[in-house]
Image (cartoon, rainbow, N blue to C red):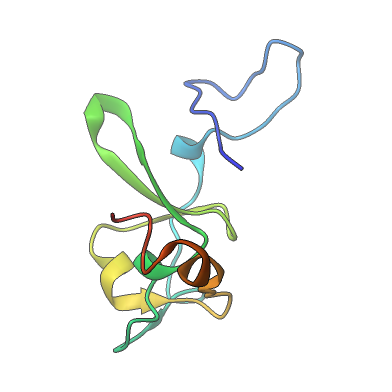
Length: 95
């Protein structure tokens, strides 16, 4: 399960699909403050990608949205899941 980074929204076959760089930023309607290990960075859906000029983009695959730098450490949503924690160890994305 992965996403390809594209610089435009137009695929060669004519279909329209947003690239990760075009995803909207998630706001307080989705993200809630958390003071536990249940934060975005430890979530099954959290990913990071290299964007334009090698600037990292923090993403949530569940909501198809971007996370503001730092919020991945202090926030989570209702969809937080640790499914991967049981399979590969704690926080495989950061390892």
